[in-house]
Image (cartoon, rainbow, N blue to C red; front, side, top):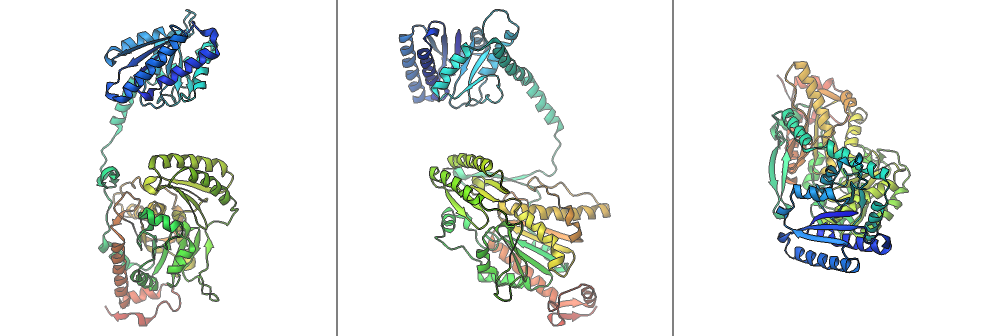
Length: 593
C-alpha cells in the first residue's frame, strides 16, 4: 500500500511529526512491515533559510532511522518546485493509494483536492486497489470543505499512527463514501464556477453615488484606514442652533465619559486604576456643570445623561442638577427628571428590566478568574449590573483567542440565564461582558421617548439631540437617527420630494415605528459622535472642548429665545400646557409685531 506526501521543506508542514506517526504505527502493528511504503517528496525551500536547513537535517535523520529499522519503508526525495508541477504531482498521486497532508499551520493547500480528482474513477474501478483516501490535518485550510478525509491533529502522534491503521483496515463501503463526499465538493466548486460567480457579481454592481470616504489614523503598527459615509461631516452648529431656537419640545440625550468629560478609557493605565478603585473617576468641570444646569432650567428641554457608569458615579457629580434625568449602567437604572426623594434628598431610581436572579454573577466571575490566571494583563471589573473581563493590556492575539474561548464557555454555562454576553474586540477596548438581557443605550433611549408625555408638559417632541463617543453609544445613536429618518421620509412623501439616500451600514436597523406617536411631524434630529471615526451618528465634533462650546452656544440661543418673544409667540405658548412655576412673564420681554 503506497502512502504519499508532497510538502515544502519547512517546519510548519509537519514532516517530522508524520515520520514519528509512521514509526509508532509500525512498532504497534509489525504485521504491516514490508506491506506499506511512504513516498515523501520534499520541495526545496531555500528562502526559509535556517528553518529549511534545520527541517531538512531532521527529516533526513528520521528517514535514515526508520529505513535502518525497516528497510525500504520510506522513499524520500527532494526536488525543486519547478520539477514538481501539476503533471508530475498528478502522476505521483495517481500511483498512490493514500495521500497524507499533515501541516501544523497552513494557508491555501490544493493537494487534497488534486488527489481527489486524480482518483475520481475509484468509485467504479475494478482494480481491487484501496485508493482515494486522504489523511488531512485539522490545521489545513481545506479541512472544512474536505469532509470525506480522515481528520487528524498532527501534534498527537497517536492520532497519526491510528490514521495509518484506520486507512489500511477501512472497508470498501466507507472508503467509497468518503471519496464520494470529497468528490462532490471538488467537482461542484470549480475554478470555472468561481470565475462565473465573480463575473455575475461584477455585472450586478451599480455605481454607489454615496461612496464612503477613507482617511488614515495612527502611526506605525497602529495605523489603520477608517471608512466613513460620505455624508458624515462636522456638526453644523448654525443649523442645530436654528432648529433649537424654533423648537418648543426638545429631547437631549448625551453620554457621560468621553462626551461631557474626558474619557478614562483612552489611557489603559487610567482604566486599570479606575477599575481596581486605586484612582478616582474623572468628573465634569465646573463650567460643564453650570452649562447642564442652564440647559435643564429651560422648560423646553428634557435633558438626560445616559452613561455606562454606576449609579454612585453619576449621583456624586450630577445629582444636584435640577430637572436632569440620569441613566446608569447603559440604562439599567433610570432616574427621571425631578425624581428626588423629599425626605432624604436622594435620587429615586427605577430599573429598565425586572430585577431577576443574579446567581449568574458568581458563576461568571468564577469562570473569568480561570482565564485571568492564564492571560497575563487581563483583569475582572465588576459593577452593580454587569461583570467584565478586560484584556486590553494583554497580548492582542492571545488575548483575543482567550476572549473567544471565554465567550463560548460563558454562552454554554449561562444559557439558562436571562443574560447577554458581549465581546468587544481590541479596537473597542478588548472585553467580554455579561449583563442582563435587553439592556443597552438604544433600548433606554426608546424607553425615554415613549415616556415623554408622562414626565413632561408636552405630548410630542420636535427637536432631538443625541451625543456619544464610543461603541456603547452606537445603539442610542442608531435608534434616534432612525426615528428622525421616519419623520423625514414622511415629510418627503407628503411634499412629493425625492426620497432620502439609504442609511449607512453603520446604523443598526431597529423597529422604531411605535415612536411615531411621540414625535412631531416637524421633528429635527441631530446625532453626533465625539471624534472623527466610523459611527451611526450623522455628524461629529472633534473633542470634549468642542462639545462644551457647542452646549454653551445652545444655552445662549435658548436665553435669547426666552428673553424676546412676540405676541404671536405668546398666543402659541398660551395654547401649550405647561407646568406651574416653569414659565412666567418675568422670564422674558415682549416685542409686538
